[in-house]
Image 1 (tube, one colour):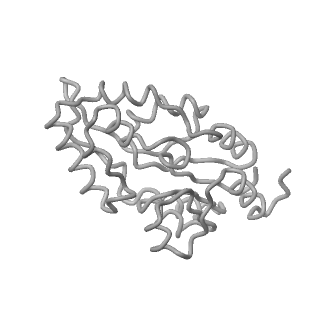
Image 2 (tube, rainbow, N blue to C red):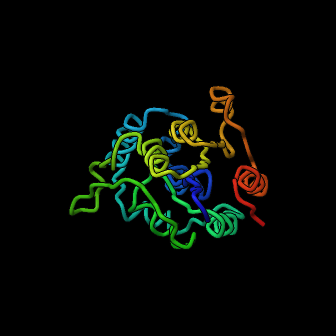
Length: 206
């Protein structure tokens, strides 16, 4: 595997957007907003928590939606290939309580995420970031450990990670992210991203 690490965002790259699926299953259209729409993560989460409180939705209802989700077509096979050839870390701004069922389907890659604060009624009352700007910070820390870092993400909150990485790639991003970050190569298929990892590597990968 050598000294190369691949860092992935989770939602929109390997699995569907959790909040969009919650919106569709509950009929609460206001929950469709994601980091593709709102660059400020704190602003977005305060907005979401207000809606959950208003609508009376708790962790159980959201986990029921997540339990019905599967990785995006081809994602599990792609990730399995990456794990065979590189070390892999998922850097996500989701929460461990949301991601657990999806990690099972992805064969348990390493995940750096955040935590929800849940009261005794099962209501999500707050959230605790592991640290601010954790994606870019993780990339820089890996580089300090003499790893070469490749990274792929799709949203505004991934761009710090992608710009910090030795090679950063957008995967199926919205048009406005492409427009604002023209320096980042764009990929829409796993096979093309796989080929880019091979060509970017300093090693011979079959």
